Image 1 (cartoon, rainbow, N blue to C red):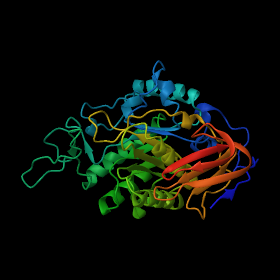
Image 2 (cartoon, rainbow, N blue to C red):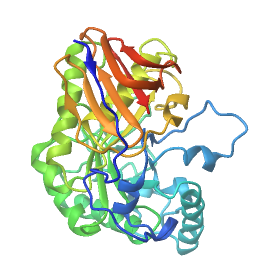
Image 3 (cartoon, rainbow, N blue to C red):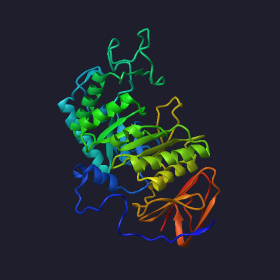
Length: 384
């Protein structure tokens, strides 16, 4: 089907939040203001950085992203115990160092959201003494291995005492003022995780953000306590994979705590030059959610996980959304933004032709025309 599109710049943004006047800058911006004020595409960083930009200082590269999550010490925080799993407070001097780093990042990107991972599922061997009862063990008392690539050992989050300790660490990180929230890896719904998330939410309060890695799954029981899913999508080869990803993302938008900060990541299939997959990931995130996207290296590589390029496509800012996204009769997902139209065409769907009343520029091809084609398994941004 060929559809004619009329693009108009709308004065009022329908970004899920009311417009606010005279908003403060940088560190004084609330979390809500930073979430809603950013332009799109909106990219996040998962632990490890973009490594394709040379001769740029690290904070400038970080600040290209609108959300990052990392370990608490990444910005300079230091715990009060060499065994980080036993720590229950942060060094005061390190808090000041980390706050200065935060200020520097927010000066470069006033809408940046900064989260810290709190370990609960597994951790490096130095995290706890080897004889500690917070390590999960087999029937012979041998510590169980978690993430094998990193040599991590499983932690026993079924232990109520340990759950309380995890919550205490989360509270310390939030109380430092360095981070806007926390990230919890390896997330699924089970009775012990549900108890854990309740305790953590109570400890960090209502305003702190909580992001959980559910991959491409939903976790309905813990949804009321969580602001977003880190969707580390390990499966993206088939049409069924992409449909599942889209459905999970849409579910998260509708069911998670507000403000939502869903983070969609897919991995390349052949190389970082799988530009169609990068564009598909970006535009799926934009048309189905108000979230953040990332296209990165596959985890099985021997290099650190989540390393990625910075793509010119991500510099093509299209403003804020002016309407909800929708699925068209031709199978594509579309959404209007202040400066144009975002289109996502799923794998398995035919190429789609879009006609406009006036010439528009394709961010994918750089061409300006009144008619453009979006291939299957691809996406594009059409700028007024």
